[in-house]
Length: 152
Length: 99
Image (cartoon, rainbow over all chains, first blue to last red; front, side):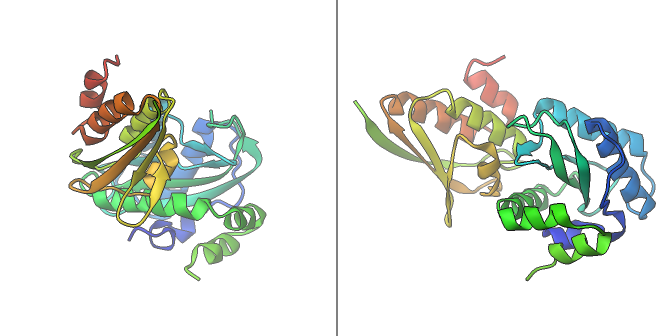
């Protein structure tokens, strides 16, 4: 439930984002989730706004070209998310001022704080591994990325 | 006088130590000269780094061990223990005189 291989929706993975702004890439990721059948009844724009409101409290650009935008939202009944890569890099008001190339989006149901915490922990823990991040950045396809997320 | 102080703090925020309270705690910790670490049963992380605090995945009811070491350890321990044990970010802000 809380590992990336469990909450990342394979069909929503974006190996090459086209948007170049923080808001744009967040929207692109949410739209991919919706197109993959997740959050089917929800208003994508509303989810994007919720994520951006969360970003205003503090950027999820955690440095080393990684961002972990997330929100809790009533539109989902289980943890869902996606992984997206930007070749050009996106300005994200990151803690180290660097543009972001790897994004992990997480949307949690409103009423599962434990799952939300464990999911964030798993993402942060995975991203501490420089080899993992490097491999992700070199991935070319949905399949490449999906394989990297599977437990060893 | 440099000293090392420790206190066990129970997480009471119903959302646990997620990003907002972790970031607020780390920001406060950064204002003190003392080093700050926070530990759960299995690991110890740097309390001035909110991303590391997320590694604790501390749910409500969890006991964390707060350790501070430095010349302002006593002041730091009081302020940080209050922050960490607060039941909401708003309560934390009020307790520490922040807007």
